[in-house]
Image (cartoon, rainbow, N blue to C red; front, top):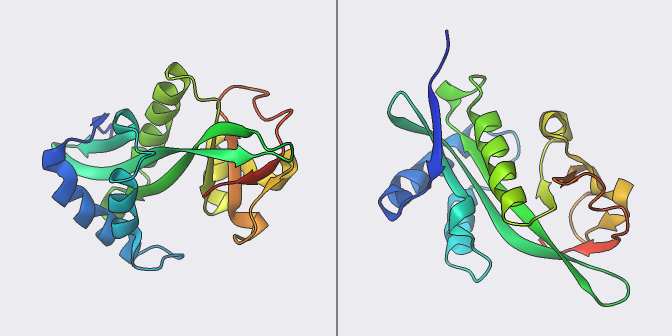
Amino acid sequence: MKTNIIVRQTTEADYPIVYNLIKTAFETAEHRDGTEQDFAVGLRNGGNYLPELDLVAELDGHLAGHIMFTKTYVAQPDGSKYDVLMVAPLSVLLEHRNKGVGSALMEEGFRIAEASGYEAAFLLGDPNYYQRFGYKPSHLYGIGHGVYPAEYLLAKEIISGALKNVTGTVNM
C-alpha cells in the first residue's frame, strides 16, 4: 500500500494540533520526560527558531508527524562558534509509524537546511533509529556535551565533510 505523505511548513493554525501530536506521540516513546510538547513551544518562541524548518507531515489529509530544526552552534576550543542545527522533536503518531512519515520529514528538513546553508545537524536520540538518516555519535567528530550521554548525542553531516575540522561542545 503506497501512502501519500505531504510535508509542508507548520502554520500558526497547526500549533494546537502539533502540540497534541507531540504529546500523544511521546506517550509511547521509550525515552521521554512528558514535556516534549512544551519544549517545542519554547523553541518556537525562542530566538533560534527557523519557521521554514518547522515541518508537519500530512497523511490522508491528517497530521501524522512533526519535526523542528532550530539554530544552535558548536563552541570550539578557540572560542569560535560553528553554526549547526538541532533537531527536536521528531514526532510521529503511533498509528502512522513505519509508513515513511519520519523519513519524509527528516529528508525534507535536510533539503531545506542544505538550501539555507546549514551543513550539519545534531540531536539527542536512539542511535539505532537515527543511523538510517546518517547520524553518528558526535564524539566520532570530536564534539560532545557536558551533560548528555555520549551514546545518544548524534551528529549528521548534511554536507559531506562539514564537521572534519570542527571540535568542541554542541549547545543543546
